[in-house]
Length: 238
Image (cartoon, rainbow, N blue to C red):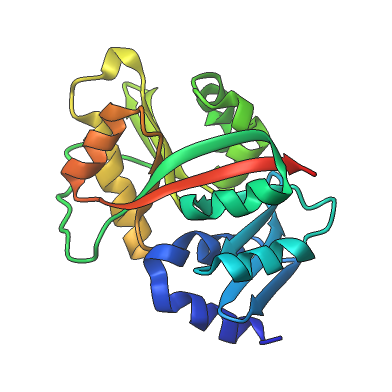
């Protein structure tokens, strides 16, 4: 088994593929971080005990899955090609599928037209109440990400008009503009603000967007994001 430093350097050889696992193990000390042949797998806890796997071989993936314990049931950022291997062993309890997109280093982002500030922990209840993903998140997770992640809040006359924050793996997410403030370019400003903050922290900007969310996909493509591919989160049972 290699030390964590050597494993992290191995993952950094493909930042686009491995930005999620690198962000996750940076934000949450892993229970384990293991290099197996040319693959890496890790377990750490944010809202759940998540398993992340970086792999390019179906054979190696099957060997890794054979090592999983019965209580290891939550998997994150699983590449689409991996799903048949998982389905050979597991049944899916719930699943969230999105498109992963990343912003190349050579894409320039304009400054925002509006002044944004970090979110306050007291904003978490309001953000949760306006989330379309209540079944996949909770207020404590949002509070933790406001405390420890990167966030942006746009307030109009003291009212929270729009926001975004980084997820447990450093992905830019939770981007939302209240209905009465839409069609004013605020979503673009919030996204640009988040991109700048993430880049200043030395992180590759990336997002996860559902395939049916054409408005958010269009916003990301206009900003210069490139498609990596389809990825999945899910809970399994044997």
